[in-house]
Length: 308
Image 1: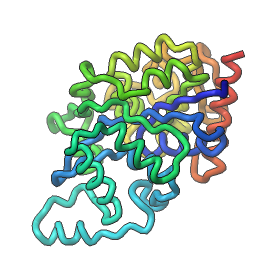
Image 2 (image 1 turned 90 degrees about the horizontal axis):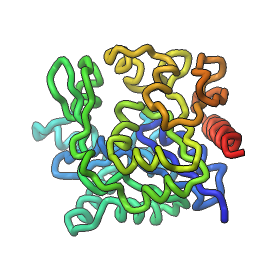
Image 3 (image 1 turned 60 degrees about the vertical axis):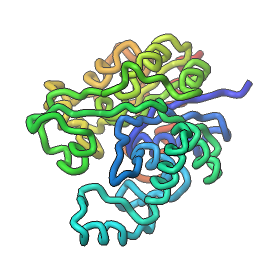
Image 4 (image 1 turned 45 degrees about the horizontal axis):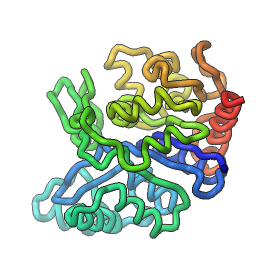
């Protein structure tokens, strides 16, 4: 039986790692389980930012300048919306609207998100499984010094400016993992945790009890890639959030956060790392496809070492 691999992912950094793995692994040997805590309804359209970022990245359609959305995007819809006095804090590109409209139509017809995403991936000829963490509604809320904010209001509208006190995941405790999620974790030869924000992009998955239990009980090594490079986050509010939660911005804090779930950690070059874990070192900055493959190979090698 051929080897199987699973990655828990969210955001742009996570999509880059998945792309690296996808480039070097055999077709149909990879499963990506994607955060949907960021999902929300905007102008009546269901938006799945992390799933869509992954779809665009793997299909070669992602906007390389912005880091999100589609390449060659136009913004006529947003211009018309603004002219009518509509909220313009969350940009929806003209091409991007197609995913949201198609998803909305299918959801309204009673189709679960997991089947919708599988169809999108098949249409774009992607040779892997992309699974939402759940077909149920789970919403990330951020408790800040400006009050309790829905994730996208905090992340996009307020640009992560409010000071974070806590993060919560509404609906996670009762959510049922999407079909295939638990099997992917339990039957994998290795499970990877992408260099996504642990608190905002990975914790929504871990907040679903059956997913956490599967990670605790799988025989596969669980390997995380640190989102930190020389004590800083490449993109997003990871370092800022860690400081606001009273944590040191170090790989020790990352490892402590994941706790006993982890068997190994990939860190950037000579960055300090906890001795209690098996460590792999490489340049984890992923600017190019070659960079993504390099980090993916380091993670695979570390997992292979844990399997021997």
